[in-house]
Picture (tube, each protein chain N blue to C red):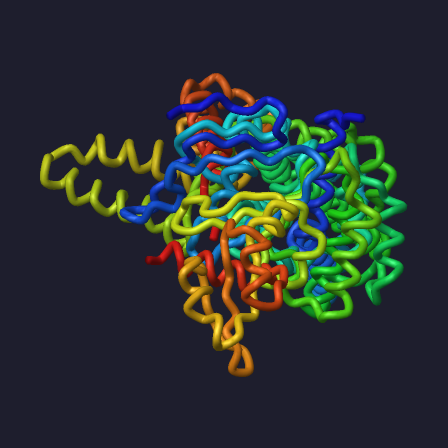
Length: 291
Length: 330
């Protein structure tokens, strides 16, 4: 079962295992992430997504094989951090830090940091150079953190709940900047978030994780082809149910069924077709895995 | 596209100074200023009190202190007095040295714990700075930067106090300025003080190592772990020593091991751990002022204990680095 690591991948994992006491946080987890992708790692609390990110970032030990940018994060974390950047938890900058000092420090230690870019991002906020983190609102701390990280030209960017605590205007702005200003085909971004609907239009790939296992790993195109939502009229109900929908809910008296890998033409007869939202897909997939 | 480790270290040290500006810069500055003011006031009031009394009455004639001090027949004593002052005035700043002991102690205690408590460690760890570099920058603050800052404050304070003393004496007609300025001790004292830095580093290393290790390991209550464990051990040793009739061995462990994990950051701690370094004191008659503290302190490095402790301290710093690398947060 110990497949070879994929050398072409930015991240290649084979059989990752990690126990916290009796609880398995990672249960024989294997996946690949190719360069130039924006991957959403999505799962409920306690599903192992944070542990997966920690393993990728060399912040935790584990069993199995893992290669990040060709390096083992357990052994070569220091070298890895030149090319990888992450936000593990927003709004956790130390209270004594001043905006100007933070910029100076990152510029001083990070060879891939672009000071002008960071200052450009900061100019869009209400932050002033002399301001200390402890005098900032939570949203402002996030703004500072994001300005610093977005100015680092990393090959791999890992974002764990990056917009927690941000108001909606800035959240939209952030994802737009991320896509237009930061991302290019040489970069790879891994995002976890609870606000799936906010990231779904920027993702290129999707990974659902549950109980330390990957339950779905696909590109967004594959997801669009494979999963179809149908508004089924009352008279078609039995025919539709015969095709084994993975989820069924009712909206305004109509049944909305989600199908996995059923022929599009076959479904078109039953009613109106939609591409499911990631949130609905997520709920359906998690329910399915529970049974 | 790469930044040298020396440059990174420079930024890490600067980072520590930003974080601990109050502790590392303001505390020594404030203590120095308070000492200077208090010392000068004390000198002035002492002189003022002695002035109201005359020193001597010779043939019914009152002779003032200044007359005695400036009299040719008093030249030898005056010479000795000025010598003693020139050679030892640096110790006037002793309270600052005591403060250094506490400063370094509490700095180390929180150095590797504060950023774990507020979880900002995840931000620092997202930058290309290794745990080795981070921990070494903190050890460098404890062993070099903080002592240098306090030594500089001590030199300035003692010079200011000496200046105050000299001015007050001059105002009362006792000339000391000219003579004081010609004494080599005046210039050598600060140098000797700085020259003791390597001795301080080596003797402080076990305590710094122990505190950094606990700071890197403990999830909470760092002070309790860092001080409680050695104290508990000390109590157990006394008890066990009594039971096993091994009081001498128990005492030895207490002063050579347990005390060194907690008191090493005090300047001059080597006299605490190795009282035999000071034979002159027990011979009687001699004063602290007449012992060559500089040479005597350096001779402490001839003791294996100094180096064994330093090795143990370095090993504990290494452990702190490993713990920081693998300790999981949150």
